[in-house]
Image (tube, rainbow, N blue to C red; front, side, top):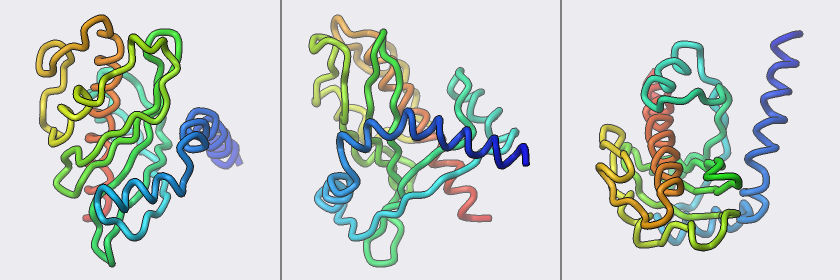
Length: 181
């Protein structure tokens, strides 16, 4: 009974953080974007419940704790799995940003789209900067201002976005590992 209550609480918390970005972008928009960008003809919504050891592994790689329940989208063309899409909503300074991060089967960023940005416009990451994250892999160093160019006047934005991409890449490793089991 406790696990059921905990699961319901996690779902509620996920909807609280995940729903605004998905509502603003829309599931139909997501499918259209993935079709245009990757030729996807099917997108399925899924959830991964991280075990304690997986949560510890992920936290060690990110340097921050994460929610053990993670929603993602599997992307297909015909019956071939192309990769996964993750929507990450996080705080930048005092307000949030939502990114759609698409990771291919090789665990590299295939596409990245800013869905929502509630900070002042001068802190918004330019498309050109977001494009520099495409092609980065799960073992790529992603430190803003060190491995990646910093965004002038928006250091917190570049740190938050690079952390979100790193999280999606590491989650793709876990999802891929589960598929192989």
